[in-house]
Length: 100
Image 1: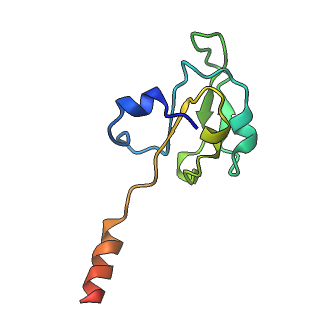
Image 2: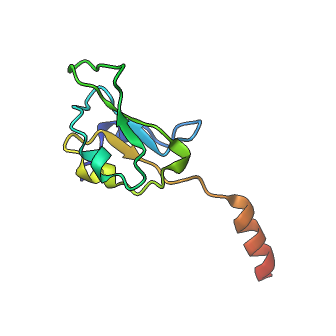
């Protein structure tokens, strides 16, 4: 799996947080990621055409995404940058307090 050029430009996850950043301008709409997604939350943008003339992929339900990165693994054009969910610091703090 190659590192996406968009990942190099993004030093941290986007705000508001999203599990996937999709480089729509490079997507060729092959739908390999749609077939690989275990949550079935990726779909072609039927109303959008990118500069290459293809309908790119978009994320239909961001909260349902588990950041499993299967989409990024099968993508031949490395259009996905996958971010893990933000940490819940309140759980960490309560764990540290209980450990004392």
